[in-house]
Length: 441
Ligand SMILES: O=C(O)C1=C[C@@H](OP(=O)(O)O)[C@@H](O)[C@H](O)C1
Ligand SMILES: C=C(OP(=O)(O)O)C(=O)O
Image 1 (cartoon, rainbow, N blue to C red):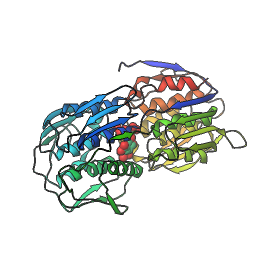
Image 2: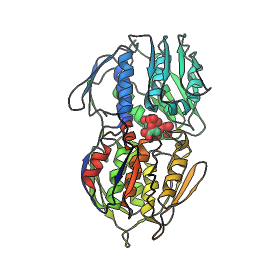
Image 3: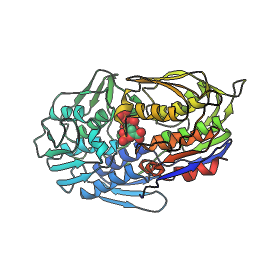
Image 4: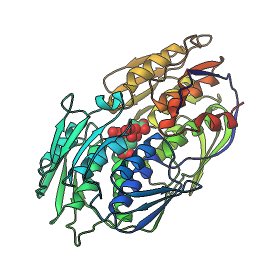
């Protein structure tokens, strides 16, 4: 997508309306890979159409899969029964963690030769814990540039499955997700994956387990740190469920829910609700703690203003380990809150699309907020009366879709705001600004 240098938006005072959410990135990329690895044909409905899912689809096509995009966000995948038709390739995976990490593990099980690379930032995002996990079962993986980071080369190897595979879970949950999805391809006997140390972003593991179950593989969880993959009973482990509907993206929902609170609402998101399998729906609970008026049904959530007597949100202290992505939206909601908002346990922000703690602190300060940042936390105090600013150079977005989407909400301050490189939203939500414009005034 072409990159618009910048846009000017706001100032806005009202937000009202409803939005049909694009499909969940996390569910879309898992479903694409599992459909590719399974026997049978899978029709995926409401698949996210964005950069992250495009690189996954392209990679699968390069590996010899038939992946057909149809009208109305339907995508049909013909599964290969576990063995990719093409056993070599040079795959470009952009900045999609949900493509890079799971594909690394699935390809390491294939016995072929592959190279995986991405954009410059992807080459600064860690993958060592996953590679260490895969090496325990005999995978041959080499780092092309810096040790511990993509690009990587996967070399043909004889996979020797072990009873126990250990993986660290404190840098990214995507390493465990990748092992969970890949090891059933080779498990002649049950394999136990043991998580060493803390497991962050746990709700994403639950998404993985639920989707694997939809494709016929049930993982047992004897305790919070252990996952037992069953022995494969036939050559093809994953079986297509036929059809799968992708929920709306709960992280994308967070911007509109926050709008409903700061712009009086009501703003309703359609596509996620009480029945969601995504951890980021808990963002609505965090917003409720700040004083927002929330209601929800099976597949919708609505926010209509704030119930606090002074009509303002109030600052909270909250552990964000389970909602790393939506937590960024809390940092922006803090601009409209009375009292400090402290987000704890967000160390993983530093290894995502950009160093999100540093980026968030720098740009929040530009609009006048008083910010304290630490290794794994951020404290945000709203600009005091008369101290809101609108930087002439614009708000930097650091090629991070969430920075652009978050800072669109800062246009509810007293000034118009320039957002630089707004098209970086294409990673997960290409139509974000068009949808945003429909609900704000
Ligand atoms: O597995 C997933 O779909 C994701 C896991 C999370 O990453 P970490 O586990 O690295 O926190 C999240 O931030 C990312 O956007 C999507
Ligand atoms: C961290 C994110 O992406 P990724 O899937 O690339 O890790 C994100 O979307 O906020």
